[in-house]
Amino acid sequence: MTLMAERPTISGTEPRGFEELLDDLDELIVPAGYKAEIIKGSIVLSPWSKGYYLRVMRLVCQQLEPYLPESHVLDRAPALYLFPGDERAYGPDIHVTHERTLETTANRLDGQGLLFVAELTSPSTRDDDLSDKVTVYGRAGIPVYLILDMQEQQATVLWTPSEKGYESRCTRPFGEKLPIPEPFDCTLDTAEFTSP
Image 1 (cartoon, rainbow, N blue to C red):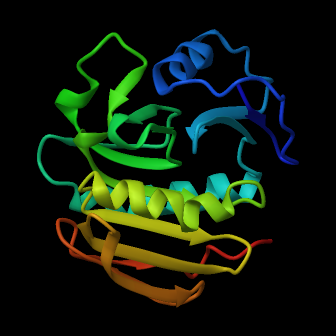
Image 2 (tube, rainbow, N blue to C red):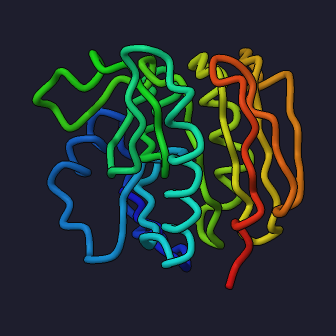
């Protein structure tokens, strides 16, 4: 098993299958202040969000909540969504899912139930947020993926999912308004997204 933290380190053990990694993840004692995901055959630990990231997440949720489709819920709580076809398990920063996806006692949720995901990049996860997750979320058919690039101070929305990721995108610097496509069909005001 490979564990990655803010500065990646490799344990040197034999590669493990997706189901074995999920079992390892269930047994893993995650250090305080970190979350764990499965990315590219490795368990990846990344630090919880900085204070102003939480402010940005709250602002996104407040703006999208009025446009939620019926029977869907918007949350920022830690949740692990599985994408078995790609052998990935992600914990998006913000997620909208059909309420029936949450009707389970399992901690492994079906990624096919997602309608929207948002990731706020950090130095340790930025590359995966901009590449691997674009492909996996698109292949899973998630209609809207919002990337808040906290290092570049810009927002990118992707839609029209496909086997290669997403066919449509729009990027705006923080401070401008970003159109969010259907099923939300609204505008996200990023004026307060900049770092303090």
